[in-house]
Length: 459
Image (tube, rainbow, N blue to C red):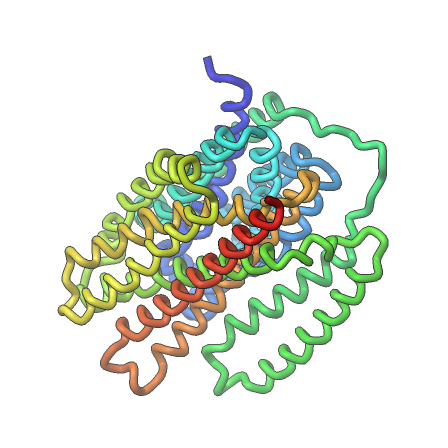
C-alpha cells in the first residue's frame, strides 16, 4: 500500500513534470502554429518567450504566497489555473489569444513550482528521507524537460499542435483531485502577515524587464535606444524595490535572509547552471541538426534517453552521494560533470563532430550533471534558512536559474555573431559554457571552504 507521504510526492512530482514538459514541448510545435496563423518567425517565438518571462517574473511572489497563504492552497490554485490555460491555449482562435493564455500559463507554473517544492521539504523532514524525495522530485522535472522536444514533435505532427496543450488537462485534473485528498491542510498561524503585493509586482516588472533586455541583447545594433531605456528603467525599479524591501514592515523578501554570502553565492551558481544547461541544449541542437544533418525529430529522440538517465541518477546516485559525502561535495561533483561535458563537446567538434564523444558529452551534462547539480543546489539554497521561508528562498533559486538561462543564451548568440567565430561556430560557444562551469566550480569551492572554517570555529 502506498503511504500518504509517497502519494504527496507522486502528486507534486506529476504537477511539476507537466510544468517542466511545457517549457520544451512547444518548440517543435511552433512551426505548425506559425503556418496556421501566418506569422513570422520573430512573432511566433513570443509563445515561448512570454511563458518564460512571466514564469521567471512571478516565481518570487509564488514562493511568498505559498509561505503566507499556504502551500496546499497555492499548489491547487496553480494547477487549476494551469489546467484552464492549457485548455484555452488549445482552443485559441487567434494568435493573440494563444499568447495571452501562454503568458497566464507561465503565472500558473510560477505558483506550482515553489509551492510543490515547499510541500516536499515540509513533508519529508528527515535528512536522508528528504534527499531521496528531492531526488525523485528532480527526476520528474528532468524527464519532463528532457522529453518535451521529442514528445512535442510527435504529438504536433500526428495530432496537431493544439494537443501539446490538451494532454495537460486530464492529468492535471487528476493531480488537483489527489492534492485535495492527500496533501495535508495548511496549518493556520496565530499571526497575520502581508503578501506585500506591490513589491511583488515591482519585482516581477524588474525581472521581466531584465529578461526582455537579455532577450533583445542580440539585436543591440537595431534596438540600442530601447536597450538604453530598459537599462535606465531596470536601475530605477531595482532602486525602488531595494528601498521598499528595506523599509517595509513585512517585506516580500526578508533582506536578512540574504545577508549570508553563502545564499548569494549559491544563487549565482544556480544562475550559471541555468546558463550552462540551456545554452548546451541550444549548441547541441546546432551540432546535431545543422552540422550532422540530423532531423529535429530524430535529434529529440537521440536526446530523450539521457533524460531517463538523468532520472535514474537523481533517484539513485544523487541520494547516495549526499549520504556518503555532503551537499557541498555533491554540488561540486555535479558541476565537474557539467565542465567535462562542455570539454567533450569542444573535443568532438574539433574532431569533425565525433558522434561517440558527442554522446559522452550529452551523458555528462543531460544525464549526470544536471541531475546532481539541481538537487544539491536546491538543498544548498535552503540550508540554514527557517522552514517558513523555504518557499520564497526556493523560488529565488528557480528565478536565478531562469535568468541565468536567458542571459547565457544571449551571450552565446552574441558569441556566435562575432566575425572570428564563423569558422568555429560550435567550439567558441562550448568554450563559453566551459568558462561558466569553471566559475561555478570556483564559487562552490569558496562555499565549501567557508563551511569548513565555520565548523572549525564552532569546535
